[in-house]
Image (cartoon, rainbow, N blue to C red):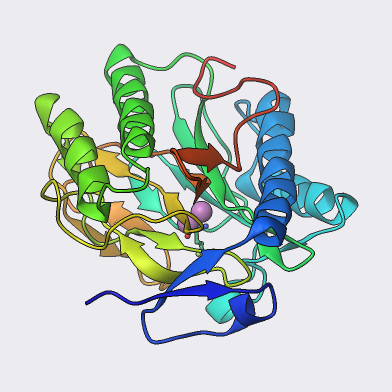
Length: 275
Ligand code: MF3
Ligand code: CO
Ligand code: CO
């Protein structure tokens, strides 16, 4: 049986053995603020994501905006990771490390930010189109955004975590895309990664029941080709084995009495490109 526990903000800091935390009003307020800052950072990146900019320069902007917002980048120093965001280009599935590599015309790029504000984590990512992007790549980006939103639609009390994955998998496979299995969404709050795991494939009605007060991310990674990935020698960068393009969008959400609140919704209405 899955275990649930109503937690105060102090108790939300404790790592537990798979117990799913149910947060109260203070948690919602904390996540709302952290999520808003995360979304504002992605909004502000739009004019900077252009051909010729290096991913390190974008990382510097993310770090500066995070700190200006009174937060710290949760990725900085996380398990040996030393950057303020992840930037994943084209066939990179996730966890691309900022470097002197420059964006070029036609690239599709995911930028994933996680400011920790007053102890709460806002984890979100979006795709950006660099210059003129081929139609095939734009279709992947659109379908991946639709996967995220269809998953979010299932995130309400009474449903199960498996309903989220099932909705995502159905939509992706309708397009003959591959859904990445190696990485999942996750509970979060005062911890960056917590229970439950949100797998982006599944059977309707399977997995833990969704209850009010749960906080978690949904972050489907969808490939034009096969689902399989591998990690490069840097220990982080995940790429598609068949080198096919991969896209991802991520939101942090909180389950309410009748649905969910998207903590990381864009104040500018920048859901998916074009922005
Ligand atoms: N933001 C990523 C997520 O969605 C985690 C990145 S961890 C890092 O869970 F160390 F790679 F930055
Ligand atoms: Co995440
Ligand atoms: Co993320």
